[in-house]
Image (cartoon, rainbow, N blue to C red; front, side):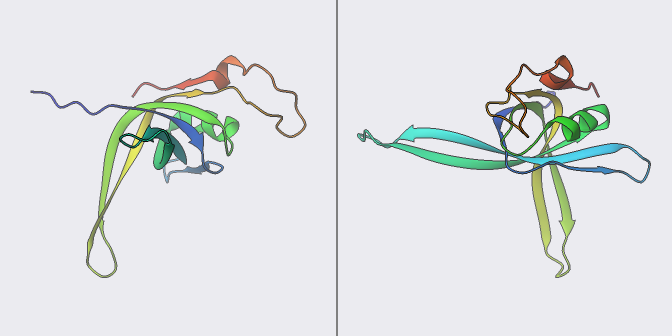
Length: 133
């Protein structure tokens, strides 16, 4: 049986993306998405909120587009896969972290003025950044 590793996430950027080049010159862009979940406890009318934070990694042309168009608070939809990084820290303890490697990103329209620009429809390049790997 073939394994399935796929995720869809919607939320808002927590901070400005961090873009770099690898030693071979490949662009890579990392950012964190906050995703809210609303729910009610049994028998309660009060709505509770739970916020989760997810690290996202993009590569190549998609990374360049994300660096150019994403900013703190911008809404995104990320389609990708989960990747687990494992390492041993300085104390010799095993550590791990799970992140999302994006295969497709859609940018949500801006909802407020940015840098004194009027709210506008996003250009086609800005609406979706897709890279097939």
